[in-house]
Every structure is written in structure tokens, then in C-alpha cells.
Image (tube, rainbow, N blue to C red; front, side):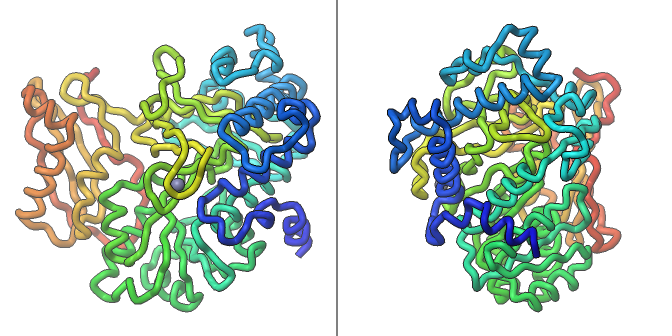
Length: 478
Ligand SMILES: [Zn+2]
């Protein structure tokens, strides 16, 4: 396979030691050092000597250098930024410190949705793949990736698989219940091939087929959608001891993973469940948890992350929540500089007990600004908040929340899909939901009624992605 040969030579993940415990840091370090070596301007900032062990400060020099380079590239090749920078009177050389970044105007997701082509750094003929995403808000965005963009992604995925502990004797089972446009399966299988790991893919929604494939392939790691893995787990648990399959780790991706769901999966399979975060705009695989399960290690070699106050646009201090803003550092296809993600996150400063000493950790998105719903006159709620409170027992398969109004009070009705409805379960769910801070405050202020539970039996074992987790039936609401 020609592709395989090219990749083996080009990939930096091959230079990362096999026993590197901290995911991504080895790869990030190799990438930054290679860049310092290649560029005189940056080398001079280090007094001509490449440090053996990079500090956070050293690493930020690399990142700011890449921001300037990406801005130069955008001025020359990307129509959207050529005009934007000119209008703002900003030049690449103005960016010398982290605080200088706020001089660069923010890029709104709606601009990308309205005119995706203006963000292309190369002509469409040079794009190896283009993906469209409707996202959660319904705007269609078209994101282009060149050969180098895709190689870099496969590289980071390989490095992450090494980082979670995979060895040549292991096999990865890829468990997406449908063919997704981006087709992460291809990327994952390619990464496994390069590293000499086994892999299996099963997109069948049948639970029996999934388990059969895992057994036949001798899978030791699983990656997939948490809602799908959860469904297989809860429906299968009685028929088979999932622990006997010998899965070492489950990697949850493409959807938010609530702690309650994580707990149920870990109990059932007898292994750790590791969370991954990504965005289509930046090639999906962007951050991964270490065994500490306290924040996700981000691919800071390819992305510069900022957290801002969404109202004022100012940086918020480390550990504080705000909107995530991302700048691609090495993109050729779609170029995004200070892109507003609408995700609410926090960034934790290094070090991490796993051994990562300069990589910042992302506290996973706690909600999207555009998915927020207000209840009880101003308490902001979003789906992830309820996931935590509702997936408290494996008999809960899924749910939809309907919000209606009676008089001035908001009525929250949770339609719970289960095969084992009981009064006890109803009580536990009502208690659990009522203890969410936003809801308990609303109940105390008499603006939200005690939540209601309605059980529905699952029509079939078939897995469906719910279009909407929260359905708002109120006519006028703030
Ligand atoms: Zn860590």
C-alpha cells in the first residue's frame, strides 16, 4: 500500500517512545522541536539552541510563531482573513504575546456557514477531502482538508492510540452505528495499520453483530459513540458477562459523555472509559483524556486554545469557564483563526499527575451556547446537565425532556425510555433531576414545578440518534 509507505516515513508518531504514558505530549514535543529546528526566526528566540525538555514558556513561543505563520499564510491565500486583517489593521508581526491574540478579531461560526469557500487556503481541486457539517444549529459548513492536513490528523490519532496504552498485540474495535460523513473509521483503521495494531469495524446496529465482531477480532480496545455503546451495554448485560470479553479500555467520542454513563459503562465492562473531544472544523480528533480522567489533553501543536468571556471577549483566568476560541496552527485547507466554538469550557494549567508537564487540559464542554434553554425565568440548562442526572441506572435507555408551561411555572416532563419502569426508578430520577442546582433553585423560587417522569417502553432494540434531547413546547419564553 503506497499510502502506508508514505505515512510510515512522514509520521512523527513513530518517533514517540512506545512506553510514553502521557497521551499526546510526546508527539507535541517532537512536532514543536522539529519546527524550531527548521525555522531560523524561531531558533533565534531560543538563542540557537533547541531545549531538550520544553517548558510551557518555550512551547508558547512555538505556538505564537505558528500563529504568525498561519496569519501570513492567510493573508496570502485566504480571502476571508485577507480582508478581515486589513480592516482591523492587524499584521502577523503584531502578535508577540498571548495577550496580543485579543487584537485579532474573532471569527463567527455563521461567517463560516455562510461562505465556507472564503476560508479555503487552496483551490478545491487541491482539497483531498471536503466535509459538510450541519452542526447542531442547522447551518451547513463546508470544511476542506489537504493531504498534509489529513496526514497530520492520522499522525495525532496514532499517537493518541499509543498514549492510551495500545500495543502491537492489541486490536481496536470501531463502533459507530452508521456511516458518518467524516468517516472516522477510515482514519482510525489507517492509524492502526501504521502502528501494526489490529482493528475491526462494525457499523451494524444489531447488538449481537457487535459482540460477535468483538469476539472474532479479539478486540482489546473499543472506540465509538457513547450512546451506542451504552445501549449495547444495557441491553446485553443480562445475556453475557461483558467483563469476560477482556476489553482494556473504551474510548468515547463524538458525543458528550456524562459521568453517570461513564460509571455504568466502567462497571459493566470492568475497564476505564476515556473521553475524547473534537470538532469537525478542526478534523474531529482534538483532545483525549489520560488515566487521571480529570480534563482532556489537547493537541496544542495544531491548535491554540483560548477561553473568553462571551460577552466582553476578554480572556478568563485558568480554571474559569468561558467560551472556547480555537486557532488552527498548521492548517492548509480550511483556515480558522480565533474561531468561536460556542462551547463552554475551562482550561486547566499544567502539570497533570499523568506526567504531562506543559500541556493544558480542557475541562470538557459543559454546554453549547446555542443549545441552551432557559427555565424558571433565566436558569440556563442544556442537555449534558440532564444526562448526568438521568443515566443513573442501566435500565434507563434514553430520554427526551419536554418543557411546557402552566401559569407562570415551567413544567419539566422527562420521557424515559426503559423496559423496567418502576415507582422506585421514577422517584430516583425526580430526586436526581431536582438536585441539579439550576432546577432546585427554580423549584425553591416556585418558578419550576417538581419534575415529572413518564415512562415509555422501547419500541425496538434499534439504535436511533435523537434529533432533540430537549423539546420546548412553551410559546413565549425568554
Ligand atoms: Zn494527564
